[in-house]
Image 1 (cartoon, protein in one colour):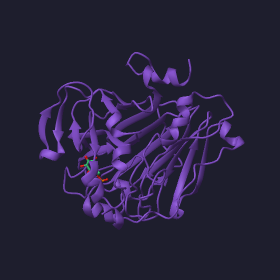
Image 2: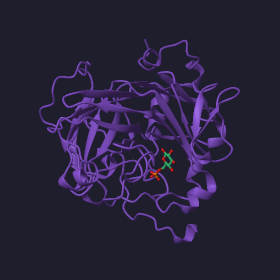
Image 3: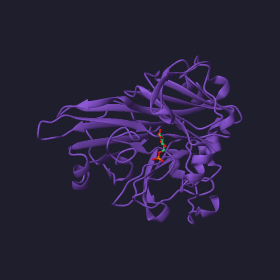
Image 4: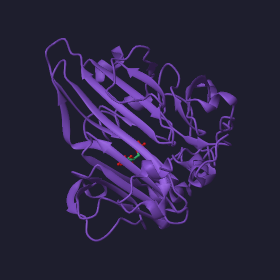
Length: 351
Ligand SMILES: O=P(O)(O)OC[C@H]1O[C@@H](O)[C@H](O)[C@@H](O)[C@@H]1O
């Protein structure tokens, strides 16, 4: 099966450091296959790339990369090059051709998560064209010391044929001084026919891990989950932190706002903080499904894990004029610090 897979021929190098990277900056440029992208750079040398894709489609992906910084940085930062899993950092199976969503990074699942509805898998937002939002309504969050970009998605005529609603989806992506990534989604019902709409949602975050068998997820133990591999039946998680030795595709319900993904080999912990997103999906396709995926290397399942902040079990319903907000914050800290006692932000910033 692996022989049938074609590798992408174009690779993208991490952005090079420049004197302007000392201050938070935002740069617009072209990526693989000429796809438009935005590069966010923060003051200590991390960067995140946001791909907007071509006119017919959009895939969002983020990669936090660290390069030589003029400042002394915590050694953990040098690992941020693979903070998020996107396989153009590795064996290059990802397909950068719209309307196919790019595998890796953080695709946005909206207005439907997976096959929980009548739309195509994960809804259409992940393969649409997103525009830069030049004049977003004010954000309550302080982004003064962050590099950020505001994007907007509105439905096309084609979209309203498959999902007959009008909406404005505003997404702010901000990179903080410690290489932490913040995503804030604001979705507003702009229907003029007085009708409410309902949706399910997920930030489909692909984390890069050294070896899936060395990874532990903390924060989901003893919770109820729906198992996608068993007809979405409900079970209760037993025991300690989650570990992985076979395919997993579960939706954990009513989860805490903080989840930790601990990578023993790298001695690194990813901390995921979320708001407005009660559920958390944990997915790894394992070997058989990996082989069946055209845009994924046969062995890549060993080096990724999706932990997705989501709203799935209870759909979000908005009346016309109402707005929903869902926030995700990602950071990386040395594993030894992540006992839930220390604030990872303070650890990252050395205070
Ligand atoms: O291949 P896709 O459409 O990107 O989806 C990947 C996976 O995404 C996960 O979020 C789902 O729980 C899985 O069921 C699904 O297989």
